[in-house]
Structure formats: C-alpha cells, structure tokens
Image (spheres, helix red, strand yellow):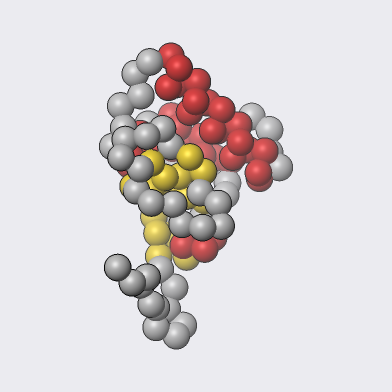
Length: 102
C-alpha cells in the first residue's frame, strides 16, 4: 500500500479528544494502539493502528483522561490495575514532553 499523498497546501485535520476542536494534524499529539495493545505516544514516524489526537494543552489532556476518551477512541477496555498504571505513566510522559507537571 502506497503512503497517501496530499495535494500541495492540503493539511489533514484531526479532532482533539479533549476539547473537540479541529486542528492541523501536525500540531497535535497522537496516541496509538495496534491490535488491542496498550497505547503508546507516537513519535516522528506514524505508528500503525487506531489513533487518538490531543491538543498540547494540559486542560485538554486532563479532560480526555477524565472522560475516558483515550480508551474509547482506541476501543480499549483497560480493566486491570496494571493497565491503568501504564495509562497513568503514559500521561506522565506526555506532560514531561510538554514541559508540564501534573
């Protein structure tokens, strides 16, 4: 499968799972989960699988977590304490990346 090509000047738009705002894909953080695996923060290379986009604002990240939008968007059911702990560590990584504290 060939990678998608975008027309000149065209930028993919994604919806933030926290605030519901629509933004250029390049400005958002993306969490991805492939085949039901625990979610991971996407790096420079697009990760395979389902993805959830988030603004780089602390309020959006908090709202997405409180509303369980990450789990819902990735179609995951994190039920065990270990899975919840991984999600909490992921949240800390996002804050560290943004230079924020919880």
